[in-house]
Image (tube, rainbow, N blue to C red):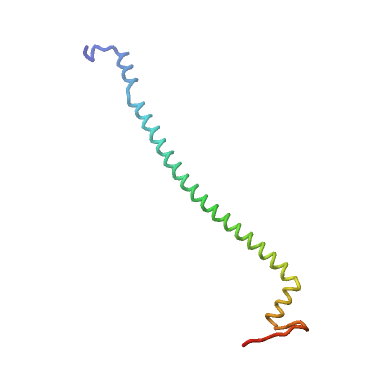
Length: 105
């Protein structure tokens, strides 16, 4: 049968079932999938960097808290008489009445 003998309704039906539209939709879906995959990979990379930063800052916080505790203990020590005696001996070379001081040069 020649194409001029095909009825018009069959030609219209054949044009509607063309493969251009489904292929275009499939290509669009694949392109979107690739774009989302690339975006997801870059976000995971950023998340890893942020996790490393968080770990670094948590480590710094732990060190500062330990240092803060040391400072608090030293502040309590500076209020004791042992500290005053130590400063007097080292800085001012003072001694108790019954002690002998040997100075070496």
